[in-house]
Amino acid sequence: MAHFLRSFRHRNYQLFFGGQLISLTGTWMQQIAQSWLVYRLTRSAGLLGLVSFAGQIPVFVLAAIGGAVADRVNRHRIIVWTQTLSMVLAFILATLTLSGAIRVWHLFVLAALLGVVNAFDIPARQAFMVDMVGREDLMNAIALNSSMFNGARVVGPAIAGGVVAWVGEGWCFFLNGVSYVAVIIGLLLMRLEHVRRAVRSGRSAAGDVVDGFRFVGRTAPVLTLLLLLGVVSLTAMPYAVLMPVFADQILHGGAAGLGLLTGASGVGALGGALSLALRRGVKGLGTWVAVSTFAFGVALLLFAWSHSFWLSAALLVPVGAAMMVQMAASNTLIQAMVPDHLRGRVMAVYSMMFMGMAPFGALFAGWMAERAGAPRTVAVGGAICIGAAIAFRLRLPAIRGEARELIIAQGLAGGDPASLPLLHRR
Image (tube, rainbow, N blue to C red; front, side, top):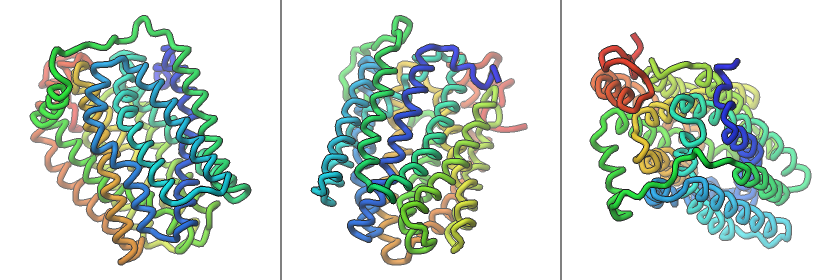
């Protein structure tokens, strides 16, 4: 247990974890309530995809700038500001909904504004992890963060389903706004004397952005992981965008059913994240990425053709587990290979692949679901996911040596390159 919770010996991480756990519960409540509100107002799978696109496309467009800012400016200060702005947007959405003035175009605008905030928040938060716990506990902190994210993913949707059914979507948005208070207080209570200070590179901001992309482009293990993540985000992860359609038209569960389905996926994701938190090193993580991506695709195919509510909920447990292992293991490997002075920019590219590709996937999923139906759309995504997993596994032997050298260069493991099986299990 001491090994499992070792990141909690750092006071700043304790404050961060506690605040984020409360805030993310509210975030998941808002996400479920917003999806249901869009669907209730429009009954359109296409508009579900469009609103998701509006909320995530800013990450794709602006994350590279956000990453450069995270490497040039105090990351703690960035996160305080982004969390404060997110709170303000949640309260605006709550006010519009509770007053009955909400319109679909309001949801588009507020989703896009939140996406702009996230383009700066996500790279800063990812890069801030090493500032809180140091290199020795970084992998454990990433896994615990994923556990926290998915613990909130279990609780938030379940609460949201009940609240929406009882008093409507507006109170979910209000509770989300209140939840940001916890994370902001935690950030303000941190002791920052040992936290990394911002370092100026001496280059222009545009030059810094280019440096981040250049590192990714010439570093085969990082590039391969990011390409896989991008394919999965584009084709498979948009299943979540279509969940209101499954909950209402196919499984007949309504808003409460939507919360239960999303919570089931969160249970699986929480289990996947906890399994990573128990690991002591990066050995074999590349194989984990390949296997989990393959399992994600298979589970999605089975879910797509289920017409039983409880069978679908059960199938979403391995869907969530496989998705989380693939995402968190990729995050861990990338952070293990990237130098500190490029961390914000490389994690910005990670954000572009993970969240930035999702809006294109959501847009396509909504369009395809209108024409071919939600089950076929999800099944196609699952099949592509399986193919991508096979291609990645075949690529692993070619990138293993460079990955070993990078991990040792960053000081997260000792030994020489020939002795550290990073991306391949013997």
